[in-house]
Length: 359
Image (cartoon, rainbow, N blue to C red; front, side, top):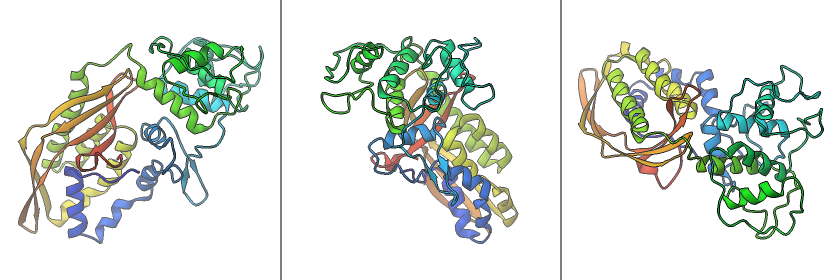
């Protein structure tokens, strides 16, 4: 489960809530709170695919369903349609194409899935159920997913290793793709010896297969310096904005360096915070030791960076009385490549919670 994290901004807001508890309720503005709640689907805790599902949600690759009561769910065990899968696949890889693609009579222009299907078909990733129909609302089979994933990642993933011998995979169009996917570890079977190629795939199964393939992409790896520069720039500019008590600038910094859940959560925290300046509150951060940044993992589109060793003194002044407390930026940052080729932080693990839960 996601948890609140401990960094300079949290300390700042926590102090405000203690000093000005009545006004603090203004931070819970409905729009910002709803945006954050969208990243907390209530039906994936304890799910076998929690890590992959939570990561996709945090990175804005998967959206949940909002019920009448406002509760957000992912319905991970629900079967997924061909249109839904293609849309997630195209979004996850960041695929684009200006080619027309195939013309399907059941994929009219303007539908939410028309562009992803056009992109995927123009790149040779998907075919129709017939020459003229795609079947966007048909439930996708596990064999079809393996086929589309291998086609989509052929240029960026090396499919090698020992293929699994599934006893229930006949000779048909998906057979070589199931073999390649098993060689790379993208599929591991419904059981030790069966794949169930004709079974309807669930949303969780679809996400896990795509996540595994994303983790294997290595054809266009980012430079380590490009990744660490994001963390360093974020820290430096956020601290400068906080020290200047310039919360408009703080918002700009967050939009520059953050995306997905991390951006929504931080926007929720600082919304309307400028009102506290009128109450005589101030804050100052002094850097004591620099952080060490280590690349934990990276692929074409995603990276994990660990920060250790940073320390700050955070001095809060309330009614003229200063109080100094330690703070840090230590933890694990998750970054993704944006459409403009920049990298942004979309999630964070606090240093005190590395063995626990994602933020």
